[in-house]
Image (tube, rainbow, N blue to C red; front, side, top):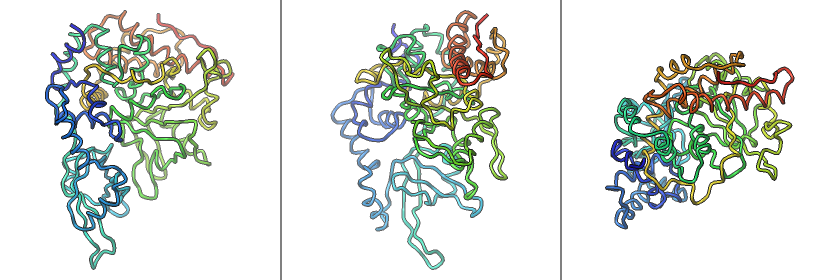
Length: 469
């Protein structure tokens, strides 16, 4: 029995044919996989997509998820007092200075809309990572006591997975051998497990370590076209990708002008994409704040002090030589990231380096054509596993390393190994040999790459070769 049949047998309705997203016509829409698969599940029975179903999905998208070119048309309908239903990624921001709660509606490019208090109470995720769903909007014109018209969210139907039985998920692991489980995870991530080697599958899984384990910090360097940011944009609503450009402390940590929290406190994971085009602030406040946060999970800005469990991922493009290895392998592969991020004290706080140059470029065969766990279900499982402490206890008892006296090395490897353990052996049914091979060994490798680069960058970092006893 292959992994697909077992997945269907044991996970039932939370399994989906991953090719349906491509066949249903979502590719032309800027919609994450976890939302697209939720829509598919509402229309498709038994993984069968026929012309009638495809037409229903098309009508749904045209009605509730119009193209951006229709923005003014939608605004005009609101101005005419039509009630408009829109599928969007809704978020709420609280301004303590004004005592206001303001709603952000990306489709309308508006961040000062209003929302009913009861909707916030019923959907508290609106205050953190935001919630995808269908909202009913209406317009209220200016009146005697206000000089501006306002758009209100009056009703909201969130797209969210139902109750997750995490213990059942863990229990199901025993029905899969190692290869079958890895293939299921890779397919659930949206990648075709049949085109990747075992080594490449492990690198793909490494990308989701910061989603499943709190405060894991990674950097992945690779040529363009290797799909570095795909998983973060499509699988988890708890991850936020920040594109290139200027990143300010207000956006990352806390906005002092509006007294609103930054990204760090609202997501499980912050991803800095296209890092080669990122610029910091002239005062160095961003990098200083990041160094403090990556070390302790705390930050302060103005009179605000806060903590967070969010992980941090940096994605960057690098140049390869004719042998398909980094052009600056000898000098130091961090030469191609912005200078303000090359400080060794910052790099040392990154737990692991993913050698993305070992992964093939994205092709027509890259997307999974197999069964896999639905993205919203898989995302919620990873999110809930963050709070499970028995995995780190297992790692601390069974991890035995030599040449690992540095506290940052030890912490980094512990967190990485814990994350691998949660993903690969969620039932904790494994031998010491399996733990060393599939969890500890890759964790050591990821941290060793950071240590090797630090040695090239600064004489204060001695050459270290971390080994498993």
